[in-house]
Amino acid sequence: MIVPLEHVLILAAALFALGAACAVMRRGVIMILVGVEIMFTGAAVAFIGAALRWQSLDGQAAVILAMGLAAAELAFGLALLVHARRRGGSLKSDRYTGLGGRT
Amino acid sequence: MTIYGALFYLLAGITLVAAVLAVTRKDPMHAVLYLVAALLATAAIFLLLGAPLPAILQVVIYAGAIMVFYLFIIMLLGPRGEGGSIAPRRAALPGLLAGLFLAAAWIVFDGDPGVKTVLSASQASAAALGAFLVKTYWPVLEAVSILLFAALVAALVLCRPRRPHPGGQAGRT
Image (cartoon, rainbow over all chains, first blue to last red; front, side):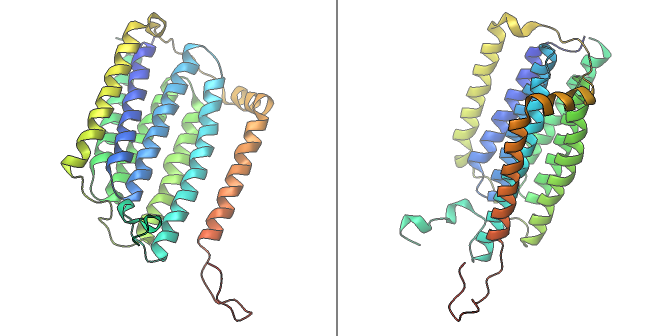
């Protein structure tokens, strides 16, 4: 006997909401990526709880696949960041206005 | 409340506090270090909920490799404090929406008898999960490996140093 599934899901929802709020309200691209990571973690907690509730391995498999997805996303995101910085850009998402016509 | 239940609430509290601190820090370096703490507590939650292989992978790959890579990039990109401060006016709407989302989720979970089931402790063996993953989800595994390869190529192309083309024209960027 551990806890009701409800509490696991509430923890997952809280982590997801926190990550989403972070991704929306922060301006630094690094902090936006941190928010996305927290959202991934919330989803993983929900998957693991559901895998235990229904005694199925699918949830745990999904967590491992999502981990690979997060690694690819982060590698590409950070490479974009290095590229933007090298081109003389800033790390603030507000400054990426090249497509707005005002440069 | 059993000892497992107490442990779960303790770890959930650590995860949430570390995540809140990670979200609100000004310095990205501190934020990522708090994120590592949150990920390690999550790995312990996975272990508690009967998933040893995801727990180990969370520590080794996520909190270990990916976060160290993150710290390297932050150090590489130079001056600290690039995270930017949070203007209260800017944080109000996302915070409100996140609170509303959480309240809605709470109401939905509260009204659903299906999620009241108390989880009983059991462990899925790593060998069983590995065999299941390769047997059932092999197309997805291949897709993830192709995705990782594509990300690798994209990172190499994006971070390629700019040098003039041997033909005399300006190098492509």
